[in-house]
Image (cartoon, rainbow, N blue to C red):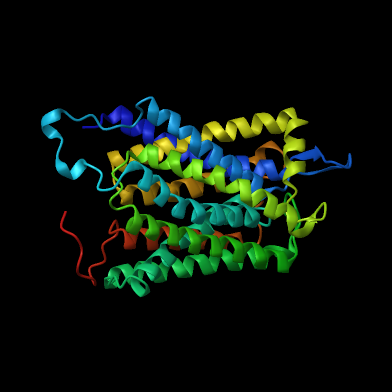
Length: 363
């Protein structure tokens, strides 16, 4: 039995550090640091930020080794069902598949974050429930109930409203980087495609890792370790591809140079590493102490908190801060989209039970 104090700490950790993750990423992209040519420029390095995420996930492996989050069982409680059906080495190799999905999805998401506000970014991430449902239905043949389809359709309406608010607000001055309509479309497209990949990651984890009976923190740590190994290939590929970053798609050499020469950037990345690893631990503990439905509701709380922080920074701290958010003429559509996403997720997760539907699980 998990104590009430532990439950409160887990929930607070997931919400607070989950918000801090997104805010740190947005701040990082707005920081001005001297590049190779001596010219100050924004640290817009989405794949380097993805690399730091995998570093944070690898750190979780040390928490696992220290015994954090391991269920305590007496010998007479141990059953054959708890024993792994495959070797730990094979389990480690299988984890490379979702790690690859995660790498691609996170890189695209953070690229999209460059072109939109943190709240819009977080809301668009709610579309993952749509794609995971479609993949389970059309690829693996799972039959969704009517209330689940209703939840998916409500989420579609929410994502549409959020995307529309981004486009319609383009004509108005906003804090931070100014982007064109075409760049806004690109940002939305990148985040949505990233959700397709993350939905695929979830389904792959469900299918491939069902026999992997490793502790959750160990799985997170192994996924982080795989991400670091894959970046030994990803960084040279990004360097070889043509682009706008010193002639490269992303100049990873300059990324390390900029981090080395900026104390503020180093401190921000250290905060992110602590925040991301703590959020992963809190996430595992929330799943253990509650269930997936509560996790969905907490993600919604995280989204609203990010928006509130952005508005507060703009109106009560300084309107010139780049990661602040301004209430614009079509922001009401963003708010409506958030409500629809919340209702859709709650409908899908059976938190809201409509009398016109049947097939709900017995409590």
